[in-house]
Amino acid sequence: MFQVMLVDDETIILSGIKFLIDWEQEDCTIMHTAKNGSDALEKIRNRQPDIVLCDIKMPVMDGIELLKAVTKEFPSIVFIMLTNFQEFDLARETLRLRAADYLLKAQLEPATLIKSLNMAKEECRKRSQLKKADTLSNYYNLKQKEILDNAFLKILFESEDSSFMKAAKVLNDNHMLTGYSYFYIPLDLSGMPEGSFSSQKDKKKIHAWIKELTKQISEQIFVHHLFINTGQTDCIILYLWGLNKDSKENFSLFQNKLSTTVSKIVQARCIVYPTQVYFGENQLIACREELMYLIEIYYLGKELEPVNAARPVFEPLGLLGIGDRLTTELNAKNIAGVLLLLDKASERIQNVVHQKSQAVWLCSELYRSLAKSLNMSNSAAEDYQEINSLMTRKQVLLWIDKLKNSIREMLYQNPGMKSRPVEMAKQYIKEHIDEHINLQEVAEYAAISPAYFSSLFKKQSGQSFVDYVNKAKVERACSLIREGNYRINEIAYKLSFENAYYFTRVFRKFTGTTPREYQREVCDKKTEWDQPLF
Image (cartoon, rainbow, N blue to C red):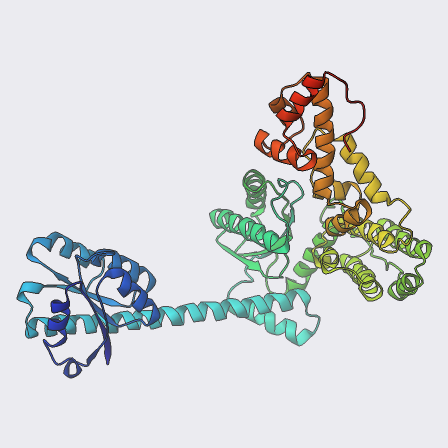
């Protein structure tokens, strides 16, 4: 049975349509009525009818607006429009907007309404079939993509022969082994503007943006391509097929267009590392090995060698058991022993030609020991959990260095001793007092994680980092006012405040007065103020 909704701002019209025909006999039931388009839209969203009989002219939201909104959200719902003689142009417009029919209120008779209902019911059936076809098509496409994704992951990471062969058959059955190549595209976000991302969620958005740019450019140059979903947000792996041995020129064109576009639009850096072009199932393993080689070369920071050159021989880091040893030293609060172990880890990472997977294992072991032995806050711990995002040997060394500094501060027992990162930060603030200063850059300068640095700074200084910076800037502002060489707005600009209003607000917070009032006091007293304000 078809669910019908009646929409008209005239009660007498609604009542008349209700009793004009035997709705059940026409395989219909009236599920709702509404007196304006806004009310109707809310009811349609709560429970979608099959057919809507709707007046064109109504208050709040008219029939045409309702038709547009519902067609966009629920394209399978069919409209029959009700109109007066003078609204013929509007009625014809509703047909263009996919209404099934329109009826004249003044000539509304049972036979006319039944004929229009039959048209609407037939349209409902057609739209329902199209909806099912679209649903099945979308389902098939999603299932096909899922099958291909699983096949590629097995090709790249499975060592079992049977799984590998099954995955290879999937690719072959889809004609994806006729001239194929992988593109490894690591992303370097270090050149992006400050504040572009502050979390993994932000990085995923940027990754999706760059992926969309990659998709658009690859569609311009290559016939077939597919993204390999590894779950990483710091690189893109692209699979191309339907290539030939002369595709190298297109590889260079793709590299140039992508790197230039990403640099201009996102201000990130990406380099394309392509494998050679391979053919058939028999060369799948060789292609995979070359891709893994490219990933390792990028990780180590080495230059790509010619195709026939000998590939590097990887060695073990030789750090088995370092996690348990670190746990022992942490439990004993032996700072010297802890630093010795971490220095050893850095030295091996720096000097041994090793695989990226070994570095990931090492960082995981170090983090496991830290989490097990020390009661870190969640915010501090999060800075060490993105181990799988470490793309290069340089990033691993920086990660270990930050870990080292954080552990040193966590084990600090004597509150009377000065904290080296905090003292470094204070010196940095003093030297850059006229510049814009933020926590992220100062934490990087002190080689410590931002979250832990914020907590440590407040503990050691008795105030937040922002308050300390603003207080130091106000002290500097007082000194400049006493010198009498600058106007108030010039001082605000010189000290890198966003505007004079914000400068005044910060100044009042720490002095209890405005810069202008302070300037008047200095002028009235006509004395030098040699003592610091705080």
